[in-house]
Amino acid sequence: MNHDTQSCTDPNVMEAKVVVSSCGHEGPFGATGVKRLKSIDMIVSVPGMNALDMNAAEDAIERLPREIVPGMIVTGMEVAEIDGSP
Image (cartoon, rainbow, N blue to C red):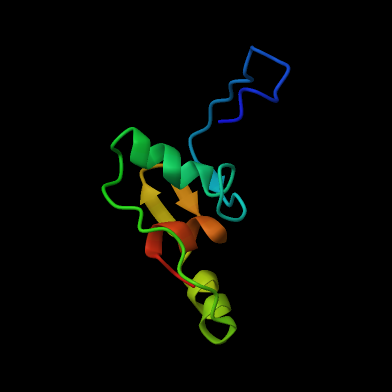
């Protein structure tokens, strides 16, 4: 996603039966697992994160990690991105 600043042209490729994606905050590098699934039409809707509400944010993120497509589990800010959590 940031081709202007990277120096390598050959990506590292890994294969796995299960991936746990917990990429960080929003922006061009945040929640990349969820954004990639949306871009290849494996998930329909990605509402993005809502405004921070510290009274609700931690509970919403901690209780909703789950498998969103076969073999991919999301946690942390990926959950906020896909659920529209604060």
